Image 1 (cartoon, rainbow, N blue to C red):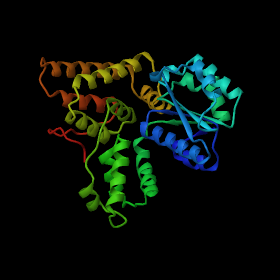
Image 2 (cartoon, one colour):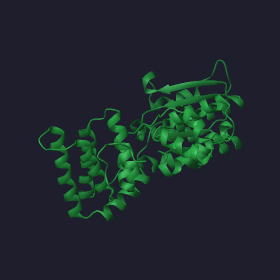
Image 3 (cartoon, rainbow, N blue to C red):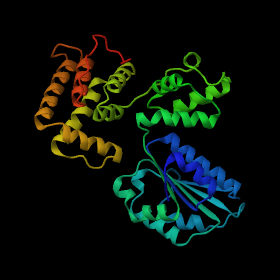
Image 4 (cartoon, rainbow, N blue to C red):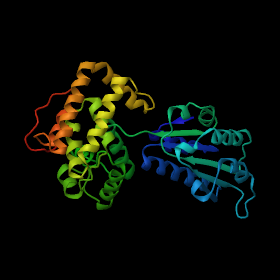
Length: 332
């Protein structure tokens, strides 16, 4: 069956499948789901584990041999397959289907990888894993979903945050789930009075905000002015090169102009479709002209601050008009 990350633990408590595929963009969610499978498997007598990866010379045709080999120490084993997304090809599909054709109660197959493309998730072997085992895709958590994720995480750790404190924590760790998990664990160890209020949280939480350029892209397509400004501020503070940010924005402006919006995650694809409907050809031409001005600022052949130009470009790309402060700083 296909299972969302938030429902994965509950499903695992009900029953242990013989085949798991854990994939996606959020490494923390992938690792925790795999750890949960391994813990549950140990409780069911799977006391031996074999880690199979390309780093150790594993190739998919050897899956059947690994599954059929006799164990010297245990009657029940976990095959922990760790492969890059591109290695889930036709050869992988044939090996996985062959394994599903000859299931055994003594072997549990756990496969983990990064984000699989749409064609891979639509393949016959993937559909069979969904039907006969469990498949979990860990998509990036959207900003609007982050407060719920934080609350669930806090609840599972035995702590409660006030609404203001929860909002502050989301702002502090936005874009970095690992930092969020670490901060929540630290709060649990501090044994603060419950619910933890904003002042207590501020005294204990370091600002672990971290963004990638693709976080900016999502904020632009969603038209989130406050988030656009905050991400640009953080990228600048972290030493990101303005040309790298500019290049990413220009690449997607051109993709919208040509209609090349394939091979993207479903959530981003919906935002892209909305942006394509919103932005006319004339507007896209204007964005390219604004991008050229930013490029000149970066190279020192035009006056003005490059990061200010990037902010204006990103806001215009997002279809929002927000007065920009003379000082480059995150929105309140």
